[in-house]
Amino acid sequence: MKFCPQCGQPGSDDQKFCMKCGADISAAVMGAAPYYPPPAKTNNKTVIIIVAAIALFMAIPVVLIVAAIAIPNLIRAKIPANQASAVASLRILDAALIQYQSIYGHYPAAISQLGPPPNGSASAEHAGLVDPALAGGNKSGYIFSYEVVPKQQASDTEGFILNADPQQYDRTGVTHYFSDQTGVIRMDARKSANAESPQLE
Image (cartoon, rainbow, N blue to C red; front, side, top):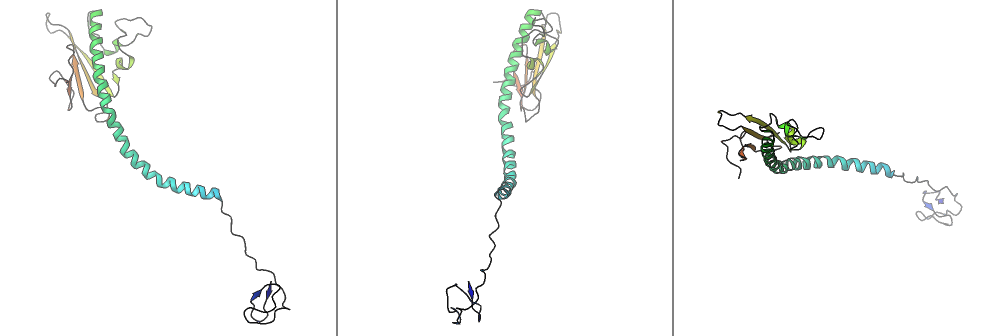
């Protein structure tokens, strides 16, 4: 590349006159072409990491909002299933207690005596009439309590009281249940149910 000695205008190697000032540049000394450094290469991994970090940072609030909406709904959706399970468990316990009384002539002292025997042979201590969870008094978010009602007079019959209450009110259940030797299940949404509570429909 040539440069005009008068105005410094660059020109091609075979050019005889300056395109700017018209000076003779046929004898001008050729100079080196100006150096333009190549553009810096972008590291693709760095760009990907930055984009991923920004996306993750922006996604966190969305995930938290979705979780705040979804989790309570999931909990509320499970409550009816827990309550249905509690009612079914009360029916099982009612039948097991009546069966126990017919076999051993009295009701068990504790609900755990209805559970499975450790050695496979049923006895008054381990009658094998209900599953271990129910014999433990805790199943599907409900706690089951049991009490024997002794005879008041010689002519009376022995009875029992069963209660099923939510383990965590408004999280595992919102209804309390009651049953006794009559097999009638009663319910109360405000407090622990008893013999005076409304009958389950």
